[in-house]
Length: 354
Image (cartoon, rainbow, N blue to C red; front, side):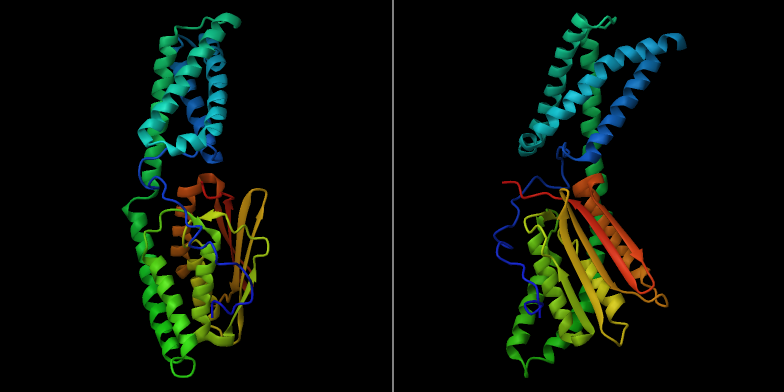
């Protein structure tokens, strides 16, 4: 049973710690300006645009160096200051409606442009052009970046990604539901209380599976869901399924995408435990280090069976959702040894926004 697995994570706060509704992850929303991937993309795009502008503006190759120097004197300080201020103001901007937040970002960049232009005229020996031309260039680049990040979020979560998640859920349900019902039926007469608890766990698991899982959820809740799933599987697999929890250092308040672990455990049971006649161990190790959350899942592996076909759908879907929520700050990797299959997920340590 989920409640009999020997490890203590308090489920308190599973419901109490539900995240508050944020802006729709799949709708228009400002990027997370504290995200390393977002900052790197801004740096690369702005510098690429500045280089193109310098090439277009230069009448000859000999004048290109002067143009690059002039633009760099304005662009680089502006870019660095803008990124710093956006990092500091990220929490405030995230609470604004998208239109108001976009206008605030635009106003911030134009104000900084004006201040830096005045400073360049006074302190730098450069032939700086009128501030209006810089306003136009900065405004166009800012608008382009906002459109890019908005389109990128939408591109990462189109109908095809939703269809993949639904397909994943549909794959879990018939196989898991059939086996689970049979396991519960076998308990009804001998252990009615245990059968009742198993049905409650099944109801909660399927409620989450069928929910609109778009927003981050507390890690403690995700772990409790995994406990319920593994508890149900232990009803039918018995001693063949051994579960090891290593979560003493788990940050219970970390926010993670829903169903980021359960599909991997389903694969671990289906491909690593079911084909075996002898007992097998599914190991879950979750810990935090250097502002990152690590989840390492291990299960038995046999090279004479095809494990990859069943895993690819779950891995691909989880990668997409990690990228959508955390961009370049999250990763998913898998590794195969002679007798073990391992999946490692690394996510930034994010707490619920109050």
